[in-house]
Length: 109
Length: 115
Image (cartoon, rainbow over all chains, first blue to last red; front, side, top):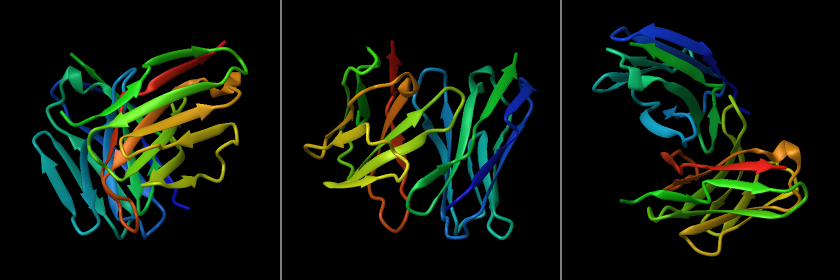
């Protein structure tokens, strides 16, 4: 089956700085890569996703890049704000989701 | 607004006492999923329904059952909860899920405590 590794497990940045979270996957059949933000006590919220026929996607301060050859994808958050503080999960999927272990992002004001 | 709704948000049950968690959706999605999420861990898929077809994960304990009486509702039954079943239970839906992947939308979760 698929194996998704996510790094770092914790990330602390100053408000206004950029944050990057990286994931690798093992199954070349995976073709869909979503990113979820989960705030304490809440369900995961889809924030951005990318499919295997695209190398990069951007939505305001959030961007995702995908390198199919190397089997890795990354989440980039620019101009971080305290409300970006949460746990972020990546996932890789062909027919079902395989989640990474999560990154706890702390944005210090 | 179209959404995924879970009730109750918090559930306390006694060791061994059956409990049912519910999920409803207004998205009219074909697929409904149940995940278990323990503290500081990723969500773990328990099972999913594609329409009326039930798909159990190989490592889901027999203690966990599910029902989907119609498109909108799905239930998670825990027949004899143990202390290790204390977790957040997440319901999710997707428009489709066969052969290719679609976005999954999660509900707010039900926090289960077992005493």
